[in-house]
Image 1 (tube, helix red, strand yellow):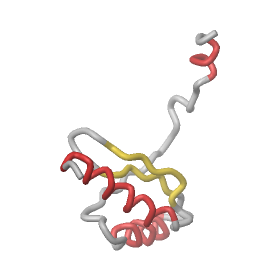
Image 2 (tube, rainbow, N blue to C red):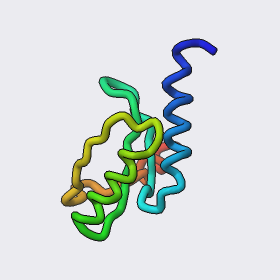
Image 3 (tube, one colour):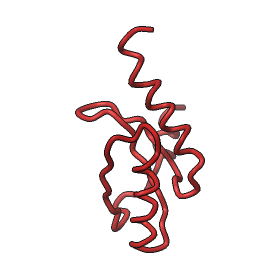
Image 4 (cartoon, rainbow, N blue to C red):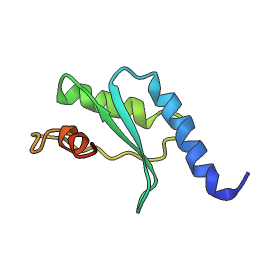
Length: 87
């Protein structure tokens, strides 16, 4: 196995571990200044978010976590205009 593939495989293992958590609604592999996973989770309250973050932090292969809150959607997810232009 080439050395360059190892982080991606490790990320897949972490993603498979996190897949069983109901609060994780989507996960992305991040490449750039930091390598890892970006997770979007749902929580019922700040206390629930803290609990979910702790469950994630304690998963095998997770070295550190950082939490951010999305307060408001400024531009909604959209692809219809891009698809119209591909005709």
